[in-house]
Image 1 (tube, helix red, strand yellow):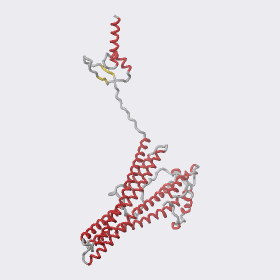
Image 2 (tube, helix red, strand yellow; image 1 turned 45 degrees about the horizontal axis):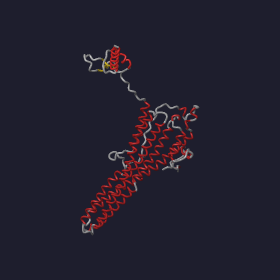
Image 3 (cartoon, rainbow, N blue to C red; image 1 turned 180 degrees about the horizontal axis):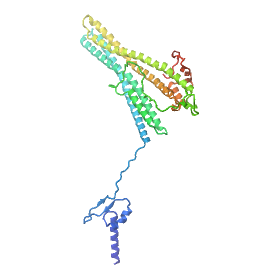
Image 4 (cartoon, rainbow, N blue to C red; image 1 turned 90 degrees about the vertical axis):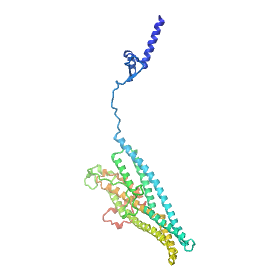
Length: 428
């Protein structure tokens, strides 16, 4: 009897355990402890069918809720925008570097190829009158000289040496932009909306100053007027109210304005003198020299194809009676001169010199605008720190801060531009 009771207890215990693991549904009165033990779990409901072979999940107890997706704060979004600008700047720098090397190779390859065509054709034109195969030599010389003329015209149009200089300078400026953006991100304070907008404006200005496409979109290699290259955005005028009590021009000065954010009347006179010298000497020098180089480049760009074309026409008259001897000499002379002119233009990289003059003039124009932007702000507290700005200007000009003091007297209206003998910059 005791054995039978013990066997019944084991059967009940096994049935209870099986209902807890969900294999065999039991009445809700017995399964309640299991549901209580698993808090928030999935409950099983008994099937309405007579046999309990199938199980079905009861999900009616789940409370549907709208899960709120966490949004990024404004500071994190600005950081991501600045990182995007830095990545774009790094990518642009790499592209300009690769394209710059490619266009520099163009300059060397096209130079040697065109000269080889012209010189080989000149030799053929010289040998043609006395050769038994005069017609073949005459035709070959004419074809080579015509090819050289077309090649010279195309190369003079795009100016590969100037293209290479554009890409070199663009690579340097894109890397500088990337460094500036990453330096802003390294600061303890998060970037502001103005920082993001300034970085974006610099990207657009660089894209406009140094375009990647060759045709169309290439910069004009023979402009009508020579202007300094501009790779920085124009600064917008701030419409915030000006506290004239902090300006050096006002008679009343608050105690806080005595420090002047590093600015003093002497420093302002110093910057005005530098500004005047930059306009009258440094920028003017490079713009004037750029015009001279541009005129020389225009003459060479026209002379090379013209000489090669003349040689090609003269080669067609070789062996034509008395004019044949003169035609051979004209073809030889014109072909040799065309090769010499092509060497002077592209071997001397005249286009690169012109682009270098524009970039140097743009460098000094940028310093002028930075000085003007600070001096035009009447409230010294809104300016860049005076001592820091003076150090930046001195480094950009290749001078020490003590050397900048000599420009104070040049800010006076009584000082004439003709009396300015020294240049402000020493780097270029």
